[in-house]
Amino acid sequence: QVQLVESGGGLVQAGESLILSCAASGSIFSINGMGWYRQAPGNQRELVAHITSGGITNYADSVKGRITISRDNAKNTVYLQMNSLKPEDTAGYYCNADGWAYYGGSNLKKPFNSWGQGTQVTVSS
Image 1 (cartoon, helix red, strand yellow):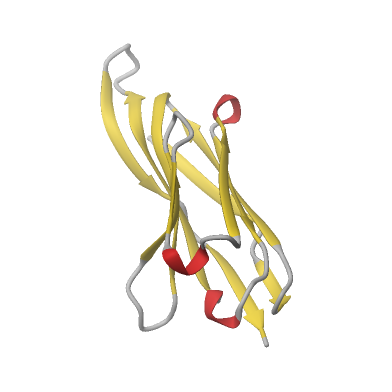
Image 2 (image 1 turned 90 degrees about the horizontal axis):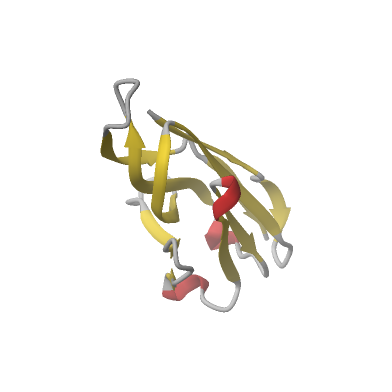
């Protein structure tokens, strides 16, 4: 079992900044990709940003230049630095991670793909 816990959401005004954090814990052997997704009411969940274990990043066009994803592999934590926030950035933000985890109390490993519970970001105009 691998758990993801997000933090850092809140209510801000347009143009302000927020930093989201997501920490993974559990029987982790290795984490490959970590990413942030968001979902606004009535909309599908969409990718915001993704980062590989080697630091290769990918961003949604709508956030390029305003949002930066980074990770601390030693802490199994991924961050999302969000600048120049806009009302259209308002959504629930969800962390995702995939990799390999131990199971059965042994050195056996199996792949995992886990989601956090989400953190709300609200940007007022």
